[in-house]
Image (cartoon, rainbow, N blue to C red; front, top):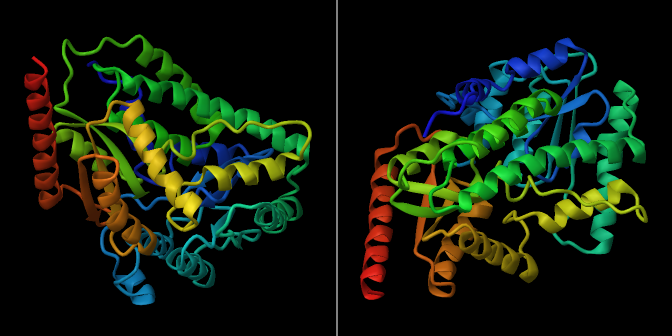
Length: 398
């Protein structure tokens, strides 16, 4: 297929958290709010002249300094953020919004705060306590956390309009991005798709890490381009695979799998489209903030939720997406030393194979894989097994 017009530009935007569009927006007077997790409702960080940047630490080398503060048995994503912060990589932020998602990210946010990684006068770090259950009283508690720690701070420090009307306006803008990415993502269902998993991963990432008003025109243009794109004469992949996992902000991981012959046809991980790029539906009977908080908690697929309902939801979502997008197998991913996903991957990879009947490749990985030879070999073997299984099935149907 012909390369996407803006693909190289999108890739360049992902090389640094303080990318070209972030600099442009700040030069025009916008307020940059960094965050790390789906549980900080992205839409609430895009009120008025604010814009959100979901933090990454691309091209991270040594983690020695962060390891000194956090030990080498902690999540590499958390350590990479601390390392990049100490290097001065987040001095451009006007605020940093952290959540009590896991103990390792808590430590990372604390270090970024106490080590004075940002010297802006109005800069602040705040932490949000996220409940572990999804019931009415925990939603109310979540709403209070968002109001006190996020909305009140934005209003007091930067004069941001945090009214219900302003929030509803932000939801409309947020939904516009979500609809575009959902429409592009649906094209992956085709037997001979006009988009690769790597390209879709790139598009998702730039939507999380760039100012919405500046990236939106590029996304609209790319949607038109993809819909008019001519597919290859025959499918370029050897097997269709769904990817489920933790914090995957490195598109090179997707590229590694697809270089091995896999087509990542659906995604269910942090920084992906599920959850994160679903439309937020609002009614007029209830305030927008409460509806947004309930939406986030109900749609979250995070392994931190251990109620029976949430455990079942995660399995059903993975099964549903794999079926809807025509996957032949599932990759279950875990970042090394991630407590939540270490448990989830170890257990559910067996459940999906034994109870749901899916071929599963279970992997743990470093934050920056580069061109991991071991991972590449395992993926090649998995793709080959799926291909052989499909051939045997086709021969049996003759």
